Image (cartoon, rainbow, N blue to C red):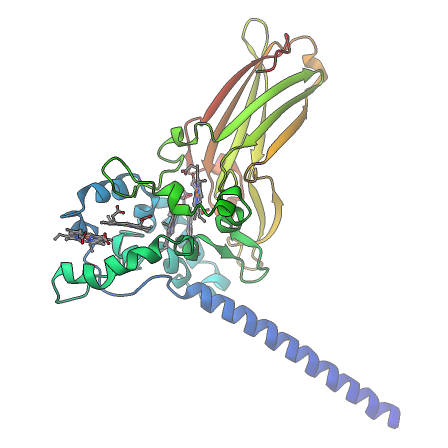
Length: 355
Ligand code: HEC
Ligand code: HEC
Ligand code: HEC
Ligand code: HEC
Ligand code: HEC
C-alpha cells in the first residue's frame, strides 16, 4: 500500500515538473516571438519618400535607384517568401506577418524601409521644418550609432537562438569594431556633395564595390591536388555577409594548352540551416557555415580526377554572388538573382609562378 502511494506521489511530482518545464519553454518561445513581432521603428502616417524628395532630391535618388531598402516590401523575393510563409501553418498562426513588417517596413506601404522608417514620421499639422527641429536634427546623433542598424540587421531563430542574420556579430568580432568604425562609416560615407550616401550598395547592383575586398592567390597544381588561397579583406564582416540568402560561389575552370575547357569545379561559401519543424521555410538550426570571416585567409585543397593528368595548363577563377531564398538553403539552381563576377583571376599552372 505504502509503495503504491509513494509511486503515485513520484509520478505526480514528475508530471508537475514536466508541466513546469513545458510552460517555461512555451513562455520563453512566446516572448521571443513577441519581440520578433514588435516594430523596430516609430509607427504613424507616412508622407512618403517623394515628399522628402522635394527638398532632398539627391538622397532620394540614391535610396530609390540603388538601395535594397527601397525594395524591402515591394520586391518580388520578399513577396514570394511572404506568400509561402502565410501558407505555413505554424509560422502564420504563431509568428504572423507582423514579424516580417517589423523590419521590412509598414504593411500598408510599398516603399519598404523609407525615409520616415529611419528618420521618424512627420508630425501632422505642423510645418515640416518644425518636424526637423523636433526630430530630425536631434535624432541624427542616434542614427549614427551602429545600434541603429543592428536593430533590424540581427535575427535569431526563436527556437534555437542560432543566428540567422549575423552581420552584427561578424562586425563585433572584426578589426573595424575594435577601431570604433561603425556600419555608417563604411556604408554611408559622405560624398563630394557633403551628404551621407544613401544607396547602401551591394553586389546586387554594383559588383565593383568588392574590388580589393576579396583576393584569390597562390594557385598551385601538384597533380591531382589543386590548391588556392582566398582571403576576405573587408575589415568589418564576413563574405558573404549575414544570412542564408547570400551565397558566394568560386568557380574554377581548368584549361588545356589550347585554352579548351577540360574541367570545372565549384566551391560554395554560405550558411546552411535545418528548417523549422512543421513550418518548413524558416531557418532554425545552423548546420554548416563556410562564410569567410572578416580578415580570414583560407587555403582550399581540391582534388582533380585522374583522367586529367598532363592535360591542365591554366585555371580561371571567378567569384559571384547568388541570391537564394531561405527555403532552398543555398541551392544556387534556385537563385533569384546572380551578380556579375566580382573577381576574375587567371593562373598559369604549368610554370607554377605565383601571382
Ligand atoms: C521643404 C523642404 C524640406 C522637406 C520637404 C524635407 N526637408 Fe529635410 N531638410 C530641409 C532643409 C532645408 C534641411 C537643412 C536644415 C538645417 O540644416 O537645419 C534639412 C535637413 C534634414 C535632415 C538633417 C538634419 C540635420 O541635423 O542636419 C534630415 C535628417 C532631414 N532633413 C530629413 C527629412 C525627411 C526624412 C524628410 C521627409 C519626411 C524631409 N527631411 C523633408 C528641408 C526639407
Ligand atoms: C527598419 C529596419 C532597418 C534599418 C534601421 C536598417 N536596415 Fe538595412 N535593411 C533592412 C532590410 C529589411 C533589408 C533587406 C531589404 C530586401 O532586400 O528586401 C536591408 C538591407 C540592407 C543592405 C543590403 C543587404 C543585401 O543583402 O543586399 C545593406 C547594405 C543595409 N541594409 C545596410 C544598413 C545600414 C548600414 C543601416 C544603418 C545605417 C541599416 N541598413 C539600417 C532593414 C533595415
Ligand atoms: C530582424 C529583421 C528582419 C525580420 C524579422 C525579417 N527580415 Fe527579411 N531581411 C532582413 C534583412 C536585414 C535582410 C537583408 C539580407 C541579410 O542581411 O542577410 C533581409 C532579407 C530578406 C529577403 C531576401 C531579399 C533578397 O532579395 O534576396 C527576403 C525574401 C526576406 N528578407 C523576407 C522576409 C520575410 C517574408 C520575413 C517574415 C517571415 C522577414 N524577411 C523577416 C531583416 C528582417
Ligand atoms: C536605412 C535608414 C535610412 C534611410 C532609409 C534613410 N536615411 Fe537618411 N540618414 C540615415 C542615417 C544613419 C544618417 C546619418 C548618417 C551619418 O551622419 O553618419 C542619415 C542622414 C540623413 C540626412 C542628413 C544629411 C546627411 O546627408 O548626412 C538627410 C537630409 C537624410 N538622411 C535624408 C533622408 C531622406 C530624404 C531619405 C529618403 C529618401 C532617407 N534619409 C532615408 C539613415 C537613413
Ligand atoms: C569596414 C567597412 C564595413 C563595416 C564597418 C560594415 N560593413 Fe557592411 N559591408 C562592407 C562591404 C565592403 C560590403 C560588401 C559590399 C557592399 O555591399 O558594400 C558589405 C556588405 C554588407 C551587407 C550585405 C550586402 C550584400 O551584398 O549582400 C550588409 C547587410 C551589411 N554590409 C550591413 C552592415 C551592418 C549592419 C554593419 C554594422 C554592424 C556593417 N555592414 C559594417 C563594409 C563594411
